Length: 149
Image 1 (cartoon, helix red, strand yellow):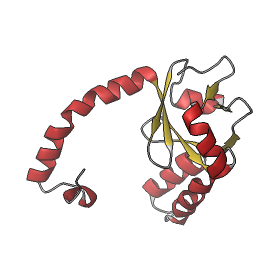
Image 2 (image 1 turned 180 degrees about the horizontal axis):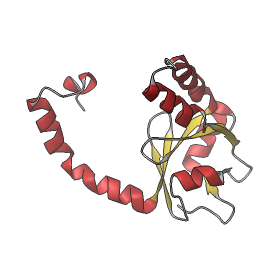
Image 3 (image 1 turned 135 degrees about the horizontal axis):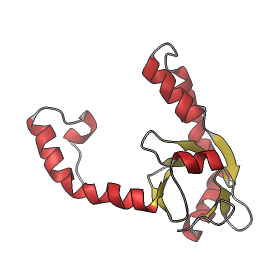
């Protein structure tokens, strides 16, 4: 996928209708600690924002998460051509230039610089070894212990 000269991203056609039905095309764009952007339907973002705002503000890590995720959250709306504008600050944070990847993650999308995504995804082949090591060391996250496909 490519950003146009104005920093707009065309949402793939197969997702446009779903997003129009689910949230009327109203979306929230925010920054992720992994240096990508997160794109949520507005209705899915609200409970996340509430949870983030409920974190203890005197905890430095909680406060940084609030600043990053809530502080950078911006409302956006799909135009008639199914495009959204990625503000320059957000594009700069995620080092988005021209080629980008839109990665579905259940109730949200991640927006990555294509080269950064390809580099990150190439490391996915190491996952089975990391899972085995985590299991041996008793470091397997609770949600993955009984997970099956």
